[in-house]
Length: 128
Image 1 (tube, rainbow, N blue to C red):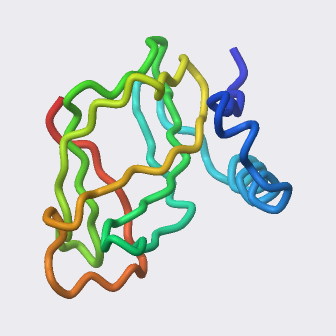
Image 2 (cartoon, rainbow, N blue to C red):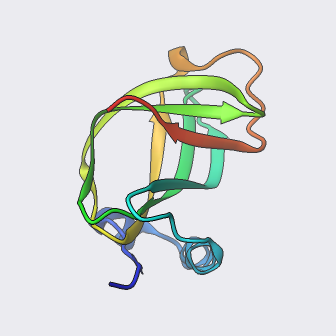
Image 3 (cartoon, helix red, strand yellow):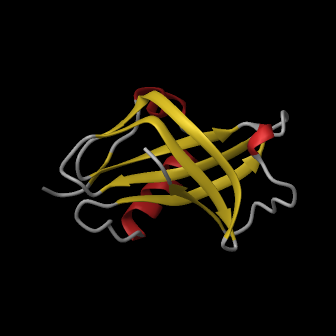
């Protein structure tokens, strides 16, 4: 079964041509996860006007099972240091087997540590 890129319905409608090109390029150039693994490939990070961390990643599901996010802990890590931790339950985010889907995870302001730089950050999956 070949790996495919799929957008959640709202993403497909709202995505700019420039962002679509960026995501498709990243998908084409990023190695696929090993069998059974999940990779969260960084696309961009930012802070919004409320001070929340927006971490946009390409969620790559290398397993044969559908991936969902129900009380799933994610950590935002910069330079080996955990800068934010939050548990996510997102019913709209369903990533099929051998599929990659872009998503923006929003970490509430109160979950962020001081000194966040928004450089060389990545998301890691913790407890599920």
